[in-house]
Amino acid sequence: MLRYDLEFVLGAHNLSSDIIRDAINELGEGVEIVEVAAEKLTRYSDFQVRISTLDPTVVFDACSQMGRIKSVKIEEKKI
Image (cartoon, rainbow, N blue to C red; front, top):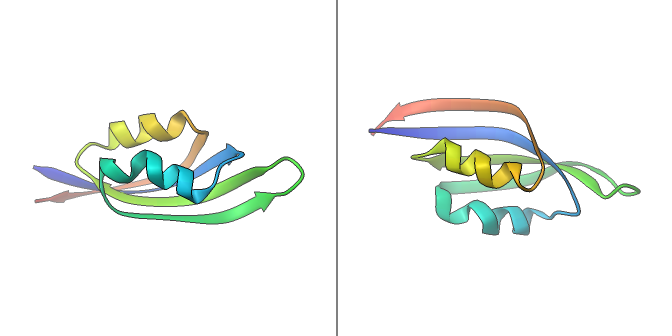
């Protein structure tokens, strides 16, 4: 069985790290979300997201509903 360590940037309007965390927290372990860039006028922010999961597709599907996924890094680990 494989576990996937995902690291990506999620660009979105009118979101907070808490909203993103609530949406993906049950999809994996070790969730880390950090706001890395924000534009006050447009309320657009980039968030660095890290999560370990058994199914990266589910995580990407959930996040793509909130914004644009960029700069994806995936590491496979056997468990």
